[in-house]
Length: 288
Image 1: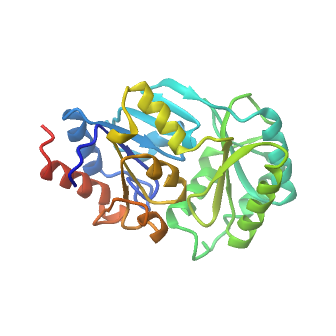
Image 2: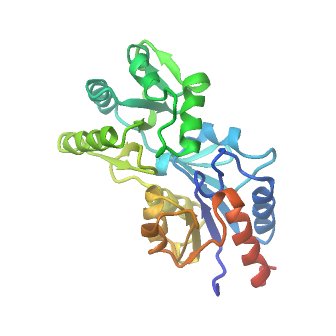
Image 3: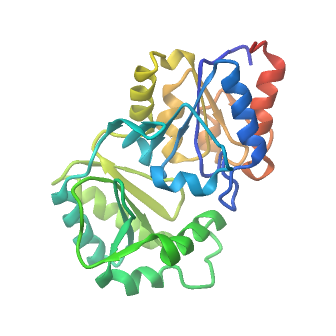
């Protein structure tokens, strides 16, 4: 590789997470080894902070976490930076989602994600069996879990700080139509969207993405992009991969992601690809 990073940012879904939404103990152990050598290891994910604990092994530790596609950054439980969707935007988007019968989850900071009770019937209908063939099993399992245990079905929107919206459809045509609606709404209220699969789209504050979150985290640690590696697999990782000195794509990433990467892992996320790649980095370079 010929590059010794001082910081490594790792995506979660499709990268360190397998398609059963779990991080392996081997991945935890290689992160521990890297950190012992003085390399800072971070997570950069579309997931909210509260979603991480349930998918990582006991004792899993990193130096920091960029969550919700750059909306917030944490070192331990300390908030390093945080952006919030406006209440006006939240209410407008929910009204539009209802008009379009689109599955949504709103993520407040510090509390359970929200879907309004009046939208429950059509939201639940989106994850009726059987699973559409083109929907990834990890995304399908996450939606099933959300409906069963994680969504708070609320009478009204609570709180004033929100990290993101997540939208899903079992139909590619439906989600594409919703993306078009969001593009029209951007003409009135500025915000950013990001996609990680063909069946979803997420909504954040304008001009926020994984790259902006990583820049804020690197500044906090007095590090630079030129000292940084990142590993990812999907479209919401593009800003991150384009930012850093050494971008790495997962073997399971689409070709458009691999094309901008300096390297591609030998194994997929279901084969512990990140573990094997980082283990190779340790063995080929003197990280002592």
